Each structure stands twice: as structure tokens, then as C-alpha cells.
Image 1 (tube, rainbow, N blue to C red):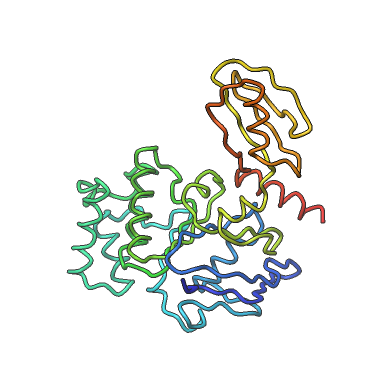
Image 2 (image 1 turned 90 degrees about the horizontal axis):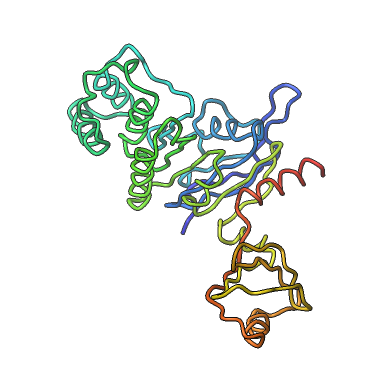
Length: 302
């Protein structure tokens, strides 16, 4: 899989503040990629460089084989966290206006808007003013305006903000559909559980630096702690041994941490030999949230 975007030693300063420091990483094409970091880490600065709101002071950003400076905006769709809509306009005319700015003819714009409004169960919104819509309804309109020109790269900043669970699931499914059709998604959020569920790969930025970058599964595997949950058919009394330490107990389930040289089969045999009926044995991987906090705290104290 080739990379759709490459960052090479990207730097950006605002006066004495160094927002980005030699940032280098890649975004594989046709993936859902998470851009993570605490407030003030440099995420927004990076997005604004991608969207050419301003340029990097040094380094380069390559998008689809070309320097981002030479690329047309129509290949990128950007949905910011803050709404940027004309509230006095009606939904239909608002979306037509934005679609025309992206190069669509009025006829094609109307066809695509009709398609998306129907897909998001919003057909009756055409003649409603933006200001009369709820926050969640406005979020859906903004999503349509972001995807209507079928960009190669879709940047979504907190796309589920203001959405109830039903509509959040609806938008999430459309994100999956767009990705399956070949769109690369750059997903920025503070919600680690959403990143864990949705993203293939991530980059974590802190204080303008890349802290970690790679596939979600590989990162979680890198931070595994040799912890397991083991469940028994009947109540069992389990104590720490030469093979493991007992971390926690919940009814008939125990969380244990294997010693560095302990083998899983040896642990299972230990319980079988003790006459326990095992019904569940599974490794517990750290959550992205745990990894995020650990890395940011370590970086802040480095």
C-alpha cells in the first residue's frame, strides 16, 4: 500500500513558539488514520498546513506524489470541529454554493446533495435555514459539504460532536463506506475509544514532536504487559505463584500478570493440575487511552 501523504521534517513557528519540530511520518493510502495529541500539541497547525491555510517554515509535505504547495484543494475535504456555515442560508442553497466552490456544476451538485440528504435521512431539510437546525443536524450538513466533491483525502476533526448515538453510528458507517471506496480518512479526536474502534494507524504528537507512529495493533502489541484474564466454571481460590502475580479478582474471573519467563501453556497446566475448570483465558492489551497517557506523561517529563 503506497503512502498518500508524507511529512518530512516539517517545522512551523509562531514567534517564539515552535508549534511543529521536525515532524516526519507517513499516511498510507486508503486507510483511516488517527491524528492524536493533547491540546496544544500541534494537531491543528498540521491540519492547517495540509489545507494550505498557511505553509510550513521548512520541510515538505507530499500529497499523492506532489508537493502540497502545488496541489488543488478539491482533492481534499476538511470538516473542522468548529462549524463554518452561513446560518441565514437554507440547507439546499448552502450546499449548492459550497459544491460549486469545489468545481461541481449546479446540476451535478443538486444530484449529489439529493443523494446525501436521502442517505442521511434528511430529505426534508432542503428549505430549512441552517440556524434552525440542531447542532447534530448541522453536523450532518457539514459532513455532506465535506464529502460532496469526492475528495481523495478526507480530514475529519471531531466528526461525531453533537450527534446522538443513532446518528453517530450513521456517520461512522458512511466513513467506512467512503474508505472502502478508496478515500483516505484523517481522523482527529480526543475520544480514544473511537480511535481504537475506527482507525487502522495513528500518529501521536506532543509538544510539536512525533511521539509514536504506526498501526494500532502493532502499537498495542508493543505495550502489552503480559496480563491475562482467566475465568473458571466454579469459584476458585487463586494466589500468586512462581508463574504469575494476581492483579485483581471479579467473581470467578481473575486478572493475572505472567512473569517474564512464564509460558501460557505452563500457566494453563498449573490451573488444570489444581483441578480447576477453565472457561475463559484471554490476554488483556492496554487501551490506546492508557498508552496515550503513558507516552504523553513520559514525553512531558523527558
